[in-house]
Image 1 (cartoon, one colour):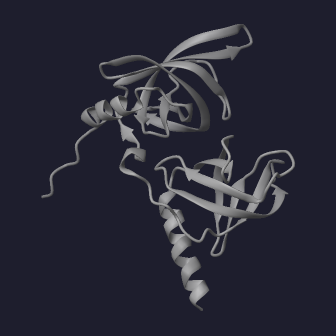
Image 2 (image 1 turned 90 degrees about the vertical axis):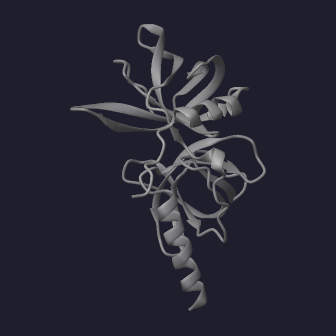
Image 3 (image 1 turned 45 degrees about the horizontal axis):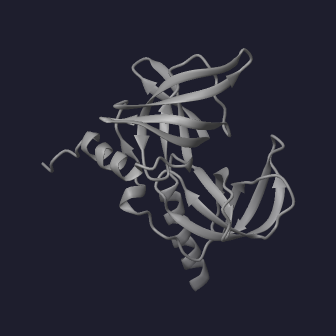
Amino acid sequence: MFSNLFSSKMEKELKTLSMGAPELELRYSGGDSITVSKMIKINRDSLVLLGFPGKLKKNKIAVKILANGARFETTILRQGLDNKGQIIFFCQMPEKIIPPSASARRLVINSQGSARVIVSTNYGEKSLTLPIWDISENGLSLLNTSKVQIKIGTKLFQSLLTVGTIKGHLADLQVANVRNHRNGKVNIPLLSCLFIHPPRTISEMLSMAKSLAPKPAPPK
């Protein structure tokens, strides 16, 4: 009975934390190599995550929810394939969740910043300047206002970031998810990216982003 209550509470907490933004960062516990993933399903006593190819070195993995920085560890119980042939991990419900820090919260700056990125196309490399929609210590989201398709998993090395008056700082990014962002009557692809290597001035950029982010409306 008590284990069911515990699982139910953990299930509810995970659903709240990953609501509308299922992108994850996976790594082996204690390891440095990052894999982009997403939450596929949250059951009462287990999770289903998008996996990665190759033989597992260990079955214990560390997971971070990219939208807010909440973290937990879980054990991979078994592997399988979804209906698209992608590897999925069936995992144990975590025993605890480390809540997100204030700096892990994504700050919406609504295009008051930009990233100059280099992407590979059929015609060679192309430089694009894309508006930054939001930013946190874990990553940022870019509005793909270009005509170049940028897919999940794409790595954007040596991206030149500008947030407000803080300009010209390099970061390496990886696209964790792509979803549509409604802008008036038009849908624009929103690229949720994680930092492979964050800019050295990330603290200053977050301070600037806080000053640019919309202030919550005062209580009535």
